[in-house]
Length: 398
Image (cartoon, rainbow, N blue to C red):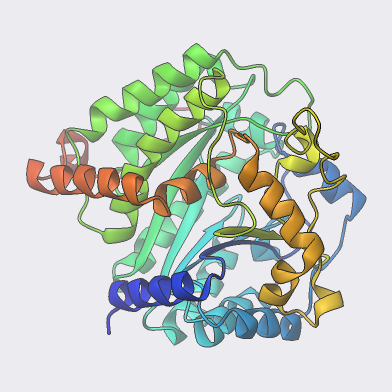
């Protein structure tokens, strides 16, 4: 069975079992970037140099799930864990996971190449997707990332992945532009460079969120975010890629932008993302959460006459359940929290939760399938793809 077919079978089995179908796994709290809008900064500062759960714990988690269709690793910078290839292999082998996303700060091409060679080449059915930052160009990128020379190192990382893709079919890249106070004024120029110079890598625009490294990073006019999403949507109608994972994600990104804007404007008050059920978050210390944002914004409020909401969104620690995630999620305290979220209006601008909402809602899946089919029928990619890919100079905007 090919990777796509095996992934679909895994999804169906996890649905029948009622286990999470999308897991976000923080493998460490170490990072060599200093992103000004980082929403995990406080957690990293509290646990700086924390190396995360041991490999054997990850094997137990994967084994307990049995089937996990999609895994996203995070940190910190996940590629700073030298045993990351073995962690991914544990989920590939023990949980039949076939779709892996690795967000990276793109500061080390060698770390990316090592992961591809150690994990991808030993896992023939896996689709490995790298999500790379693209928060500006040249010095502007460096300033947002807080690292001198970061843009040149991004270019080297992107070129390394494209070289590796030449002989590996299920390897892809996405670009992520996090709109913050520090780059909102030049989003159009940044997106234009991404589309022109990196046509093989679909780009998404995320809204800065959470309790950020620099506290004012989230001061972004929602009208600018909406304008960027409309700009991208217009170009998506004229372009397509036939690689399954980038095509699915790029199409879903457009819908994600619509929903995030509705939440930010206060028009959507209940997301229905299945937090703690379809989606779970595991931090590097083994603590399990239904969502990455509830600890900051608080649980949905109680209705009049109800008992108080759970004091914390944390569902428990895997060490107390011998790293059996389904058993932790089935515990009474966990179920009270997840039931509370499910039965009270709750909507956040966290893109991963919005993504979970889209891919686990029958209505949204039908809508997504229709858009994907339309893009496939519409023809080949637009003029951006016809241009020869050229390495832009540091600081070049157009």
